[in-house]
Image 1 (cartoon, helix red, strand yellow):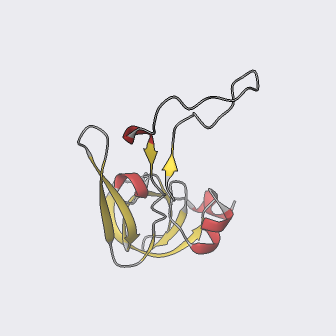
Image 2: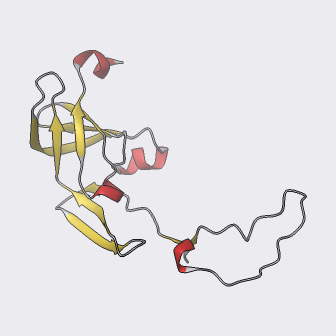
Length: 133
């Protein structure tokens, strides 16, 4: 099964059918999400549009956590995924996406990068006031 980002399968604004007048194109082809989880670091390299390479992070053990107050960034180990507001299923399975809250050695942090597209996990420390809310 493949993911396809074309619009020939949709109907017209009038409600009529769109007739297929050409075959599927390579640039319309999509991929499944990386769904980054905890574990020993594992990356997947895919070819993107225009001979570009995209790095997908499949598993991760470390994150670059920035303390906003001091401006320092440290590489720390991820202890667990606290919650993921993007998807209830991701929350249950512990999938790391942008906006997910993780627990690190420095404290609670919120992911600011897109691990499935960037290949790294960058996060910022969440202060104590926001942590309780």
